[in-house]
Image (tube, rainbow, N blue to C red; front, top):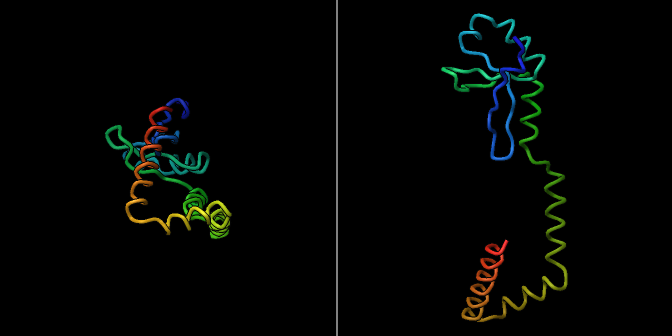
Length: 126
């Protein structure tokens, strides 16, 4: 039986899915050495119950990589913050902020409505 032929597509989100080798809970209990070898070879497998994915078994290396991928890098976040801050300090952004703070509440409300209408018009024309 070719393992790739029975792989299961497990949706992760709307853009990605994982193609995992399935094992039933019964196979896991009775054939742990075979399941373990497959995990070691493939990186992860999906355990099913009644033909539905129930859990994923993976190598420690794969688990640690997923944990690390989920943590934002402080250096990267700092770089993004610095870039955004620099953009906010440009002449045009500073002038716009000064104008917004100088506006009356009514004028600021009209400007916000105008910007919202413009954004709605642009999103519908795409």
